[in-house]
Amino acid sequence: MILYIMRHAEAVEAGDALCDEWRFLTENGRRSVERISKQIGEYGRKPRLIISSPLVRAVQTAQIAAVNACRKNRVTVSGLLAPGGDMDELITLLKGYADAKRVMVVGHEPQLGALVSALLRRSGAISLKKASCVALELLPEKEDKPADFLWYMLPGNKVITALKRAFPAP
Image (cartoon, rainbow, N blue to C red):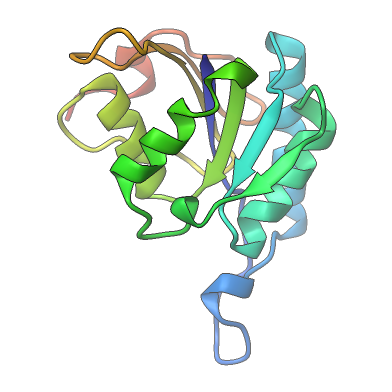
């Protein structure tokens, strides 16, 4: 299965009148998601399903990505992608979607960076930029390394296909 891991785009700041869960995308954030999701759609095989965090900024990112990059425009929501979601349960959930062949998840840092690190069995933190996307191939038969790195994409940039270039070791 190919797993696309996308961080939500730029959102307005939380404040007294707006709690974190209701933060929504800025116009710049919307443009970034449109750009990168079109790149993903043109680059290779399109995701068949998008699973999003329930927070507004992630759902908006997922909806835009579904229009531009998802083969069937299907978006579902999982609380496991909300900040603080259980990593082992998330990985189990993702493995359950293996029949979909290509799945995108949309969520937040530091959880998504930790997911990438866990699947690549990489020590040290990986941090994803806003509106960026990592593609991994899940390898269910390998317990020592559950995934292979395919590429990392940032809006408007060339695709990075070398793990060491995408996420240099600290």
